[in-house]
Image (cartoon, rainbow, N blue to C red; front, side, top):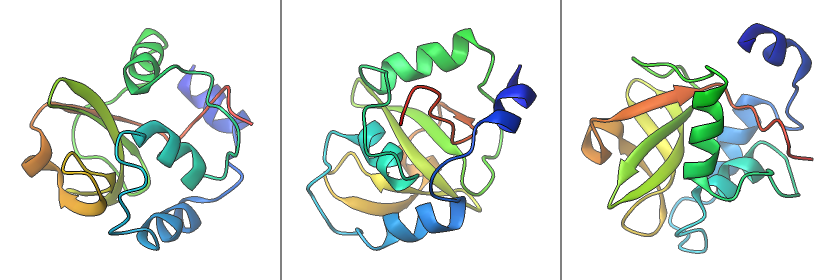
Length: 129
């Protein structure tokens, strides 16, 4: 199923452009609790993802067998638990992620400093537009 989705889903913004968009916002506190919205917009979607929040998205991805364990490749969405919230960031590769961090601002962090319990998925937003 994942391969079929990957073949038919193309994000409006490619991975490197999405990462550039995120890097331009490092230090901003405007996205504090909107990790899913931030990633959706980074990949070029202006409208709702169709999921209520990151936990809802993670459940859907799990139900559709679209989650992976192990090292997240560059551009993958990384789903992790922090302070009783499911959060999502984007992998920069080499164990680093970018996105709204638990401390409040957009930043780059080593994933192991945020959580040891994480999974990753391709950057697909199947209901966004």
